[in-house]
Image (cartoon, rainbow, N blue to C red; front, side, top):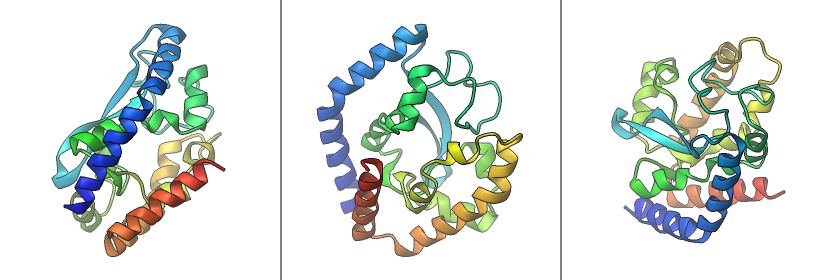
Length: 197
């Protein structure tokens, strides 16, 4: 209960403070190609219920459904403004809307797209749907530049499944064991410090 109240308060404050910045981002994204401002994608959430995650659109309009669901740093689908937003992790800010709605938490395992979720071991799938997915967690800190790590890889989804997913699985188990309000505060602090360096 404390976690949900904290999430709601911080998301409300964040959206109230950041709305002018959201407006600026929206203008630049729209000026880029006249496409939609936000990108929505189905993800697996608490209880296995699917929801639509919200991000600032960083790919050319109409390109998000083509190619791999894994995006790499040199992906030709990414727009010039999208590259900047991704480098600074600003494309993630609209997820505060998901937090406000209760689809996500500030801290929790990153929500996976349905077909990648099914690649996790069955026992871990049960752990994952028992936790509200979040904006940051142990894996997010470890793989802050996941797109860069996959740059130049011929089959990024294969590399993700064979090398990154097993490591993320371990971090999800770690969070499930250590989850607490203090753990969340620590992860939020570490994330902010890492992003502002």
